[in-house]
Figure 1 (cartoon, rainbow, N blue to C red):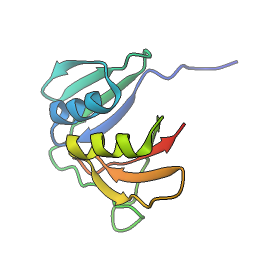
Figure 2 (figure 1 turned 45 degrees about the horizontal axis):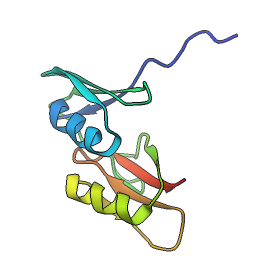
Figure 3 (figure 1 turned 90 degrees about the vertical axis):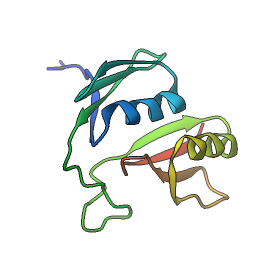
Figure 4 (figure 1 turned 180 degrees about the vertical axis):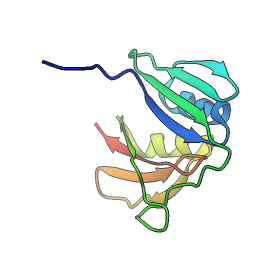
Length: 118
């Protein structure tokens, strides 16, 4: 028997509204909140939240002085099209090697995420 259910995944970042907008561009959904707490409610009912952290230090990938901490795997139908969209939204490639089923990027606050072929 489960003790809890997952309410939201929360990412610390310097600008919650901007990072919520980035992920809304990738995942769709509606952005709610302002200032230090902003939530993205995705079309499938999940919540990704963003908490203000003015002294946020971006993770490093692969692991370095500020470890990866966690990453998001985002499933896509077309890796090339998803990469184009992610880069246009402000993602930075960390490892976008061709020829495999995933590519690694950093969001505008430096959190790593993968685009993974469905």
